[in-house]
Structure formats: C-alpha cells, structure tokens
Length: 205
Image (cartoon, helix red, strand yellow):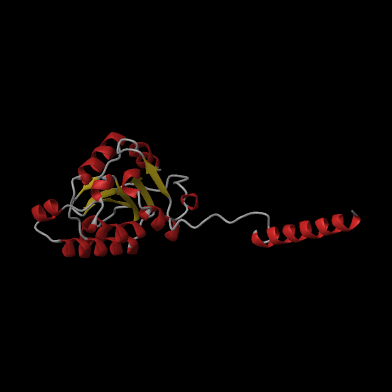
C-alpha cells in the first residue's frame, strides 16, 4: 500500500512538472497571434490640438470631401475648401484636413490621373509638415472607399496625420489601426459619418 502511494505521488509530480513546462512556468498562456494589430494599442484623441485657419482638401477626388465640408459647417468650423490644393496654396493655415477616398470619376472630372494626385498629395503633406501645420486625415466613405485606387492614397495621407477619424466599415481589415499603432497617431473610429461630427469639433481648441 505504501509502495503504491509513493508511485502515485511520483506520477502526480511528473504530471505537474510537465504542465508547468507547457505553460512556460508562468501559469498564464499567451494569446494566440491573430495577424491583426491590437486595437487596444491605439488611443483616441485626448485633448484638442487643432487651430484655425483651416484648409480642407480632397485626396483622391471622391465626393467624400463634400461630406466633410458639411460636417465642418455643422460644427461651426470656419474653413477654406480647395479640392486640388497644392503646396504653393498653403498660407497662414494652422490645420490641414484631408478627406481621403479615391474616385476614378472624380479624378477624370479634375483632369488628372492617380499618379498626379499622389504627387500632389505628397508635395502638399511635405509642405504642411515644413510649415508646422497640423494634419487631420479622415476616411468616411466606409468599405466603398477602399480598394486599389483609394488604398494608394491611404498610406501617405494617414501616416503623416496628427489625428485620424475613421468610419469603422472601412477598417474591416485593420489597415487604419495598423497605421495608427505603428506611427503613434491618435485615432477615433465612428459608426457613421454623422458620428464623426463631435470628434471633428472636439479636435479644435
């Protein structure tokens, strides 16, 4: 009987040792990798930072810029809108707002192609950075404003942002979360375009 108890004790010790090794000795398993950036690493805007005067422009020439303009009007934020604003158009602005979303129809109406729009975007952002102008980048078109054309503009426009406002439907693949996380940019995700109003208004001092 004593012999059997000793054997049982040894077996239990071995099982416990194997269990501890399997758990890394910490007693806590690591979460499985998902391939998606952790949204908890991204914080929303904590305090107002933007100031007037404000310039609003389109990046991609979609109609989304008109919706952003309507939001700004409703928020009482005075601004100038120039869909094709160039680096040379920047004056005493303190905030640049980018309404990002590609439209082949819009580009065609403007008489430019995607390469020319991308070049304008890069030059405009570069000039804004040189002048210390704050940049708010917005993607409010949802899933319809994703895809090869729009995604060409998303990287440059959002990686340079000081603040991002995103309609959640356009972030299903976590692209905006990844950009915000890797670049330390505050980002607020909203359910609809209308919900972006309070965040846009709250960004201004």
